[in-house]
Length: 132
Image (cartoon, rainbow, N blue to C red; front, side, top):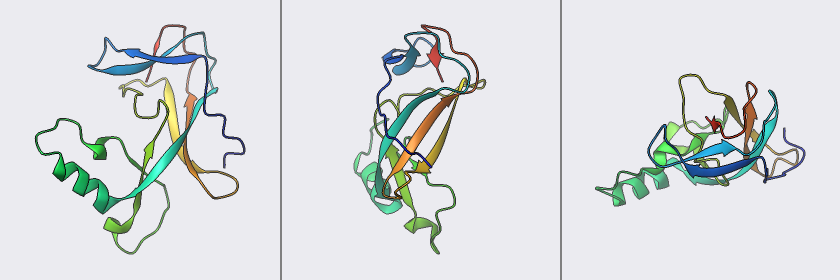
């Protein structure tokens, strides 16, 4: 569980990604392996509301379901009733790679009140490197 919610890190920034179309997150400085890069607050939505929003955006190439996460172990007798969480901050900008240098986990804060995405390096990340 996350004890503190320090949502900003000056060692990362968003900018245009040459690897993938759109934005990505890049290191401003060297970041060591095992460093928490960001703790992203999240907004919770029902699966049904995400599906409805995606259906309303017919013709759009952006779908919310591509940016939301389930909380592991969250139980519901109906899969459609589970909550999905949209990470804020840079949470939706981290690119995906076959060889990622970051790992994320979806966790509750110690008080149990909030769900956050914790992003941590899995290896050393050099300045100006795409964090993915």
